[in-house]
Image (cartoon, rainbow, N blue to C red; front, side):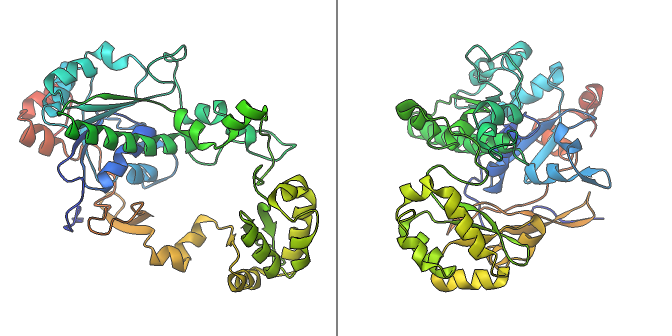
Length: 405
């Protein structure tokens, strides 16, 4: 089957930015995914014969890992073993005109292999290198292995997640990795801007897996520092606004309701036909609602249970109050707003035998929007294009190094 890939389209804002992704798994490849979405030329290194571990994570179709197709969309795959002289030489040749290298090996690994930033920056002083590791390049835990799950535990995320009388809960997806990938892409762009504005010299970015999530947790740190408060598990409630929870409708569906401002709370009361609640001395302001949240939630749940989901949503819309149904992923595919916003995109993929839908590019630039140009590549799909046509290796040299062409 000959399925076209990378169809033509308008110019992308990162066209011409050259990225070498020698990482694997999830966090750093997520960062390079965001760069590829906006047009960067991302070359992904994978181990000959095995490829990235992500190819074997989660669900597969006909032996093809599905999540890999999303995280590595828009990239080119070459099979390179960095333990070998040929692998090191491939990296050094590519680095000569690259802008970015991403890696997520344990601290000190690249130095041991002779390809750390001090070596690569001598070849290309303008190089920016993102180094993602479990605990960062410094500190007493720098030598330890780390994964996103550990970040979700040690930052305090798991401690505040779950019911008050239940066990700490981890998220149902790779939150630590995903948040690190977002921050990694952002910091790469910061470093490239600084390089281009201040003389062309690159630098390294030292990013630990737990650090972004630690900041995303909000007011916990300052609340503890100033007031000695340690946030505890409270289900879907928040410690700084009420109501905020999930509630079950008469037809056994679920909705999320948040009264984040006084005006919104009053409109919620109107939609639920209990206007007296907004003037009740227990609930007249946010501080009192937090203090009396058990009673407040009981009132809201009782009111919500009087309505079927469709009726409830219509009432909230008429009152301009904040509510959302609790969707599963199948429902997002059918939602008119998701469809209108083009939050899903369809691309063609030869390995999967046709179209595959995935999340679209996040954010819409008005003149130069991003674009998912292709799903994740076949293992070594671009060996000939990159290693022979671009770098000048011969097929014999590559085959001798265990690289198929």
